Image 1: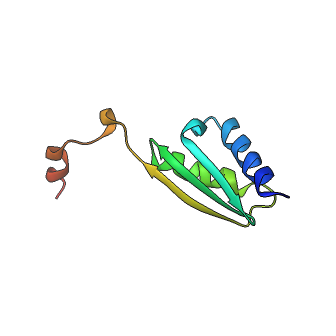
Image 2 (image 1 turned 45 degrees about the vertical axis):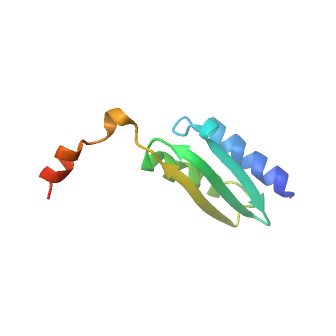
Length: 85
């Protein structure tokens, strides 16, 4: 299987997962190693993207370089963080 085919299959899998914003994730492949890059809104979404990639036949390893940027409305304020200490 070519690297382009593998990247396309992973991209398709991400697209069909309703828990993942696939538009924000770039996929590349080299010798069965898939790299995911981009930005998502939660750690769960990052984890789901990795699991989606691992499900694809031909994937040997997944480098999950996705960054998590929590939306402002879900972020705790500095005061909330200091109260937990």
